[in-house]
Length: 353
Length: 252
Picture 1: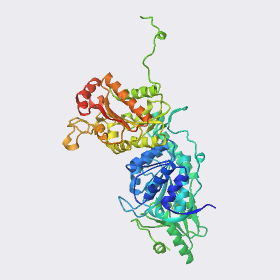
Picture 2: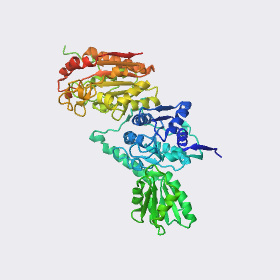
Picture 3: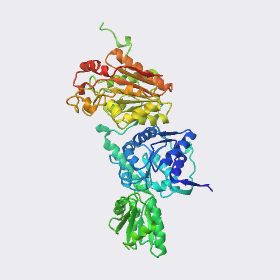
Picture 4: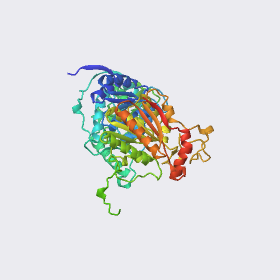
């Protein structure tokens, strides 16, 4: 049986990047994700990889563009204010079909906000963030174990679909310590062949990493059609979610990331007092599990949905789209970097019962 | 005389084989096509067509990948040195060069420029300085001369309002790390050859892993300057070169 280790979320994510075969990391300091750079600066240097502290988030994400175009498994990480700066680069990576992993260890905003945990970048992460019609795969871990598992998955999905993947987490999951089992280390043979990379056109036609299409014969719309087809495929084939005590649930909590952990605690307590509550947790917040959630909205026994987030109601819009008016959807959010406790959530829930 | 057949003639001047057979989109009298050709000749001479990556900027040279038959990347505005860093750090044995204009390099991309130079990234930046934004309609650049009229300085660049033009070679030469920094121009055949020599030397330094190299080419923009190609070259000689003096600023 694999060895259990005690790790912080940010460190588990960093080690998982190594496990996934990532040997190139570019980043810029920002709290609460500084453990990532501290961890990888040592690990990557010891492994003969590349750790580079860039002059800005803007620069770091464009270094990722170059490293991805050269075929490397590459990662950058940041937190909310820094993620705003990375959005330009993410739009270019998406346009150029360049795989990479970007981690956002969210803190409160807008502006400098606070360094405390938040989930207020849901819109930015799942609806585009930068300019143009694009999406990125967006995975939302709710435990240190998932910080590791989903990071490896993020690299694999990015390479499989030629798309940036994001780990959308928060300061609490990033900072907390839990016992986990690390996934198995990939060898170079486990990594996919890439025939589109830049590196000198020896014995082949030249390759171009581009995001500009000026001429009618290779119009930008063609690239957008390609991207939209990819997104449609992902929406059918790469949805991930957790269903917790939903079979008999009359009240369905919806939450992602750290909020879902607190909701589980609330559900346990509610069940102890005879209230049949359950949790639907999107793990891929993009692509969002609309159909799976809609199915529950058609269950006769379900009385309402209760969405809990550390923001003013962002995933709430997707929950409402999925529920499609079939049942009421109530919401409770804290959005000042404050994390509510179980009692506070139950008190809010009870207002609607 | 009229009986000379082609087979008796030796072709002594041809398109570099690393260049794609097409027409440039650049205006007549623009310096881009001169420097593009020089790079093509150098790629041929060094035999590196299959082991080189070029990076196009945002600006008139955004379509540079249409002209060299080599691996190419685009970059967001100003981010050429960052993209080059990513490429070179993954492919340390492939020659990487970035090609940038004055707005791209010295305005929006100044942070990337200085920090890539300061890290001593082992790649080459070719800087086309024509003192104006060509593609977007002739706006003031960070290298626009004092008093120079542009579409955003209709009364001439007022240094009391927007400061003096930035001398990038001199700025980068204050850093300890860069290996080679030179400013040239293309106003005469002799200057064109000097430019070629400088770029070739920069590429050779990179191959020899000596570190960061930077070649500024003081260049023309007849269309946005409102001058004929010939007068543009005169304008470079009489105005730009007095401010942007050619020379070697660093050579290790």
